[in-house]
Length: 62
Image (cartoon, helix red, strand yellow):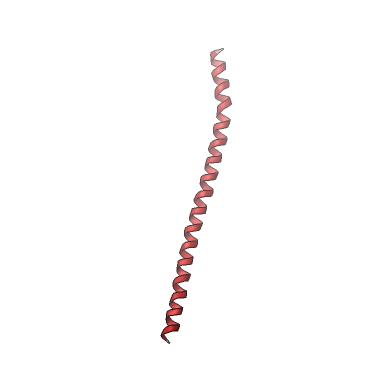
């Protein structure tokens, strides 16, 4: 009886933990990709601003 109780308890908890771990991994991957995308976008935006400032400086010197 006690061994059956513990095996039932383990079989009840394992699926919940597995789903929780899968959910955690998916959310971690989404957050990581969002962070990477934001960093890439910020880099591109900084490059474009530098180009625009260079064009303005060149136009003002003429």
